[in-house]
Image (cartoon, rainbow, N blue to C red):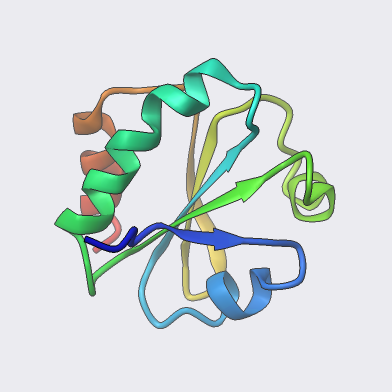
Length: 108
């Protein structure tokens, strides 16, 4: 099965997140971040569970510092929820799948 998680860059942020017609959960992460790696399988599951209703996306903060700086990302992983192109919620730090499901469900 194809990976449903979208990889976003500073250049593709507007197209993939701001202009998305569904809510977007954007994970700010880095390759060296242990907790980021720990939640990666959860995000893949969520991408399958919410396919067509929510876009799950990842942005590598080391390769794309512009957007991370714009949103004041100080620690990773940080997940931001965007609806209508605007940030509506955020969770800082790794959390169990249920926490992320509640986060998504309240914005559907």
